[in-house]
Image (cartoon, rainbow, N blue to C red; front, side, top):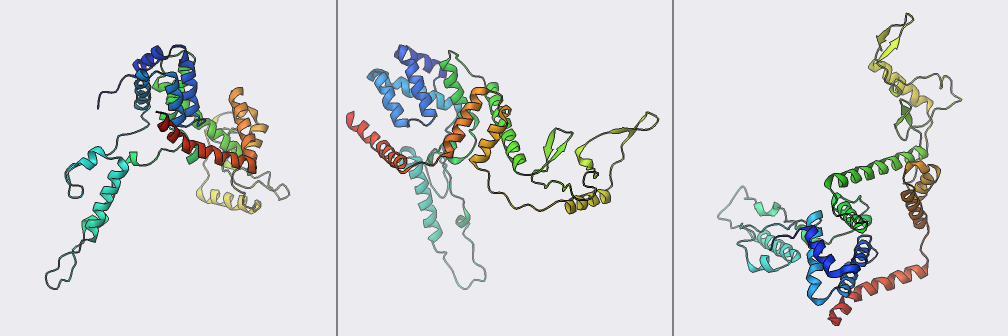
Length: 341
């Protein structure tokens, strides 16, 4: 395989070929990243903008982005062993899925092979291939979106999104430090949102009047005796105390027996609560609506609130029928593209 082309060089070549249509190309690329259009639709729109001789620039640009963001890793290199044997034409010219099926069939044949017995034996020789792990090829599995898998976007996805946003505003490069900073920001915002949602559902304790901990603990009953006078030493971390003479002396730490007594006393004063249901979109909507400062950026806050409201509505039968029609159109799009060539 030829050496991978630089991303800036590939972008410059594509921009020279597109000219003023580069903005429309970036909009289509951004729509593909946002799952608004499929990969096939994006290729069709790109070929409409490019001539037949410059379609390779589109492919080189996509390969450069993939290489830069490292979204697809290389598959396993076939080695000479007793299972797969020497590298054949199957491993060279076949897809990763065919290679995985070939390895699996070889293992099944070797597992079914009976062991030759010579006379009575007290111990049977175990077949080491019966516990041999199957080769997992990363390219054999279909790529899924992070929103469908309910996971956070990794650093490669964020890097690709930031590159497209930077090109739209006229910037040429996005450093790795900026991508890491955005990833840390996403994790902190998500942590603050979950902390706020859990604190609204259950009781909690506060340390140094700032940090919330012990999520899910029950609140003290004000009608119980000495419920307000009971002091929890875990809520403060004072190193010294001031005596009557005005001098600072080290604070005495509570013994294990005293802490156990405090825990039993707090458990006796608490009241059992029924288990809460899982966190839903209603909890997220109420948290965003009651604490707008949880997301400092107003455009990001408005977008998050709109998406939360949108997911609260259940689709009607008409919307579900339209979704089925849209899926059928997506399945027919590659066939139409192949017939038009």
